[in-house]
Image (tube, rainbow, N blue to C red; front, side, top):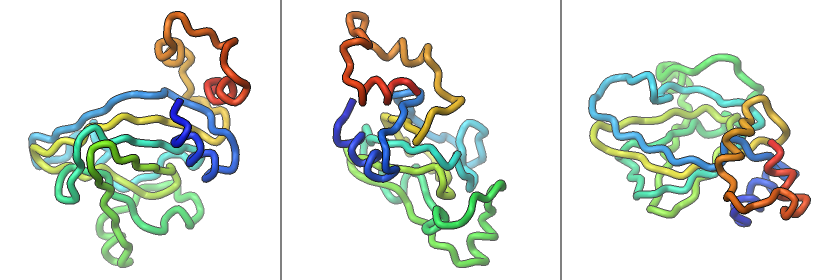
Length: 167
């Protein structure tokens, strides 16, 4: 477990986080300028107790495929619907692109409106660590078991790390 990532997320949520489906690599390279269902390219919220740390495995350019967030939407009450581009434009909401060089870490909390902004033939590849501020229904113990090294024993973990992996 990466201490820097755990410290940032613990400080932000005010407690030791729980791991969920941790970690995994994703890579998207849109080949067409049309909506594709596997991309979350619409303005949406995740669930409010989720936090992710994303490490870029290649440079993410501000003009390439990237995640975008709507600034300030983490301060509004939970909104049980998606936002439209028209709503964002009509209300002059500020859209921020998420980009950085290979090795940069992007922290994201699920309570902010965001989307994947696909750009044809521009890939976004990252390693994602997914956490929650409390136990959750999305935790998959089989995924945890696959992550552990074959000679690793959960009994050898300290109390904090055991709590994080308990999902």
